[in-house]
Image (cartoon, rainbow, N blue to C red; front, side, top):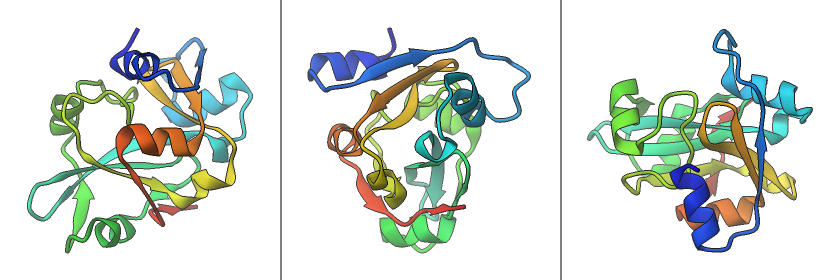
Length: 156
């Protein structure tokens, strides 16, 4: 069990867990998940951490087929500038290892933003807190349990 799955179970949120054999040599954890689980890559989302100019960590959930639009994230967060967070700071703050960071069940509650494209799907897939483990849930359920806002933060 991971903190993400513990949280979903505790609040009785509707979700499904999917696991696959993770290949440590995979170039992209998100694309590997889509491929091994037979999913449309646009429906699989990665969790990235960015830092504002003041050092505030922000969580961004974007499709694995695209990239994070840092200007879009800064705009959504109401900050001047955002850049990718230091990997060690991301791991320390979330309690998860890179490649397995879940937007759910993080050690510290950070402001979270989900790309608007998530709302096009009945369910999306995000990391369940470990490489090789994905959780499927409705975008609204993810937003509710991360207190996230939907915003235009992804680029294809």
